[in-house]
Image (cartoon, rainbow, N blue to C red; front, side, top):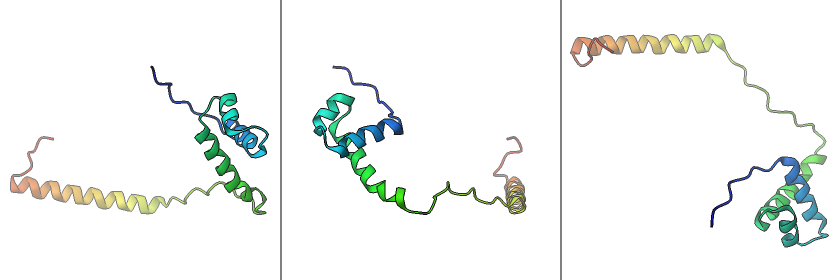
Length: 103
C-alpha cells in the first residue's frame, strides 16, 4: 500500500472546512469523507478558527509586523571589526607557523 504524498491545503480551503465543522450540519466523519481529509485535521482547523475568531472583532487593525530598521553604519563597523580580527589572527597564526601561507 503506497503512502499518499503530502498535500498542502490553501487557507481558503481550511476556512471552508472549518466553517462547515462549526455549522454542525454534518458530522466530522461525514466532512472528512466529503473533503477527503482526516477527521483530526478538521478538528484542528475548527479549533484554530474558534480560537482566532475573537481577533476579527478586535477593533485594532493588525498590520504586518514592520520591517526592522537597518542601521548601515553599525553593520559596516561590525564588518570592519571582524575583518580586523581575521587579519590579526591570520598574521599571528602565520608567524607561529600554524597557518600555511596558502589558503
